[in-house]
Image (cartoon, rainbow, N blue to C red; front, side, top):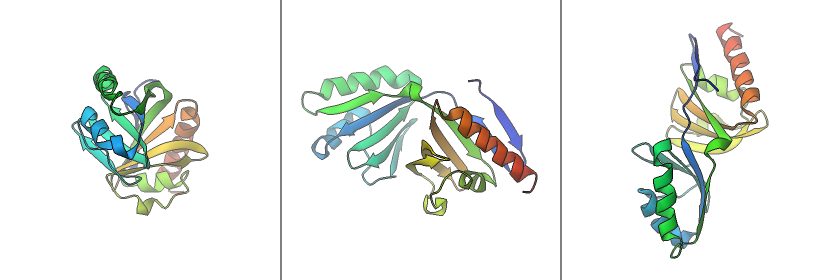
Length: 176
């Protein structure tokens, strides 16, 4: 997919460059050691996000995290977790090719996100992220600011979600 950027006065939808992504599962006893291997503490509490540099981790469940990092850090992350496996059993699965990310920004970004997401997005404060659905597609929704969201979408659902976002953006631009 090409890196496209389309603007309407009230909202911008942008395809972001690929990231290294991992699904991490580790028990409570191994959480701190896994965080040290990653170079940051793993957040506790569903929806909490911790960032260090360009790495970000969101807690998706009591023992489940989504880790994102620049593509160039993929091998270092895999190697760091390989070195702790004997002392800290865990599951680190690379899912980089599974998802695409869209950035939605602008004064109407919040409104656009509500067209396909059943959650009360006013409760998703900036700096947090959640696993949810967008018109039936499972997504990770990051709220980066009051008027800025990122949407991680499984590749197979991406065309559907992108079409829905584009339709909603055109409707907003038309004042509908």
